[in-house]
Length: 639
Image (tube, rainbow, N blue to C red; front, side, top):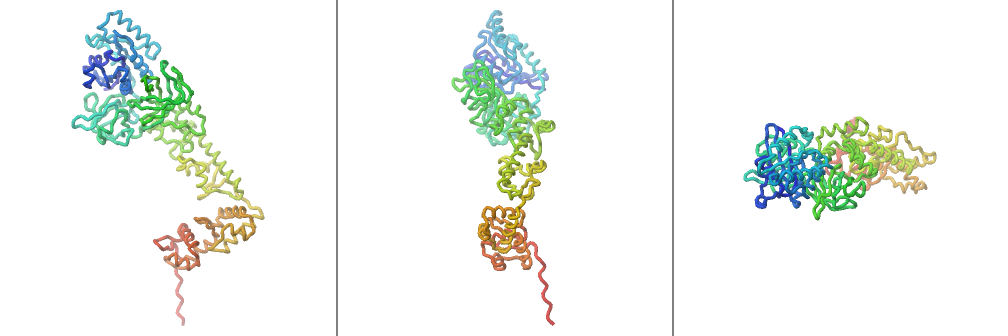
């Protein structure tokens, strides 16, 4: 059995609740104050079941003071039932509710002209003409206007038939396969049942036993039981009203405006990029920054809005704005929002979320980026990838932004790879321009390094990664260096990165000086000089000696130990051979110092080097030889 959700709208005291009672037999006014005052203050719910269809109704308040409550219930409805009293005609809240329905892009509308028992045919005809004029410039210009009376029953059955006809003709919701999202519009604790929340399931499916996240917040809850229209269900699907009994949360931890979201669904955010439209009758324009009240699904939040493109949006105009929300809410691309002035309260406009986690991109043309996000989904995915730069985007990140399932998101991303709009690797997707910029930057860094050091033919890999990749992209260093290697930009060897084919060549004078430097280090063995001492001994310029030392280190002729100590490579090789020849199984620092005539200044760095090169292994205060030569044979007894 399919379900079709209808929301009421209209001015206060035009008979919305009475009409639903006549249609369904259910009184939507549940609060004592509502019954005492005879007006709806908060959301009410009813349903009508006819064979293969269930019509669910959300009854919203008509008083201007309770428009914020009305907005909490209109998200997710598929048809608006506009209720206008024949004896009063179109009133201010009729117009505001209709404007809100336009901003929410509710596709279908049916008008119920109520209280026709209070007027004659001429007055009813005038009210009908006024409604036709109101609807003429809207998407609902051809909407039916049915005369009804909740008191006499006139037209009630015809209205039910029209709503059922619309429900049966409605296409199934495509969002049924997406991760579940249920904005909470009510929470309470029936005696002995724990916490119960109600809401309209925006998308996906929810079944008994499912685990959902309650966002914003940290709670993970389990669905203990489900009900729809008073009947227990094993499962509910997108588009229907439901009550969920939850385990894992207290009533104090649940509030209207939170959402129950399945794994992989959207998360909380505080910054939205929105394609907005101001109502022609908006009492203000958007330019600079302005405080507003933001409504999204059942959530209501104070926010600061700033027009981006264009920088000023006049009443009746459209543009792209950024909303900074003071308290987080759940949002996905495609969600509809309504914006209201704070005081005096009035609806000023609304629009569609383009990016629920927008950040101003660095190094990109802002207007082009915004226009891409305002286009189709493929354009938005490509724009997100370009803004992410070398960090790329993941299926999970895009799924959360789109509010779609991972499989559908991956298919969309791979389609962009297939037509060359994106590249993929390391479980991420990259914009070609982002990788081209990375390649240019890598070439610049290498050229800069070698221009400043003619004798260098490589640079430390860690240094290149630090200067090439931003913090978010740094974990992808191996992937990017591999990609740059395939492009012939870099050649990685151990912890060094070189430009392929580059080899520093020494002049004849530099070759002689390099040989003299190496000779000094080899002659001093395990107590080598500093480069400054070598420069003085050889009467050479310190900067030239420093460059040649780096050249010798890059070729492993000299070895730089942690702390900056330099040793001849051959001296360290001899040390390892001589240490192995001792036949020691283990030894102390004191034994090592005595055996090789070293002070602690030299002994400790050398031992750490031996540990690092796996000649020795530290065991408490002693070292063990990892590889030992066979102990020498004892001499034969003398004859």
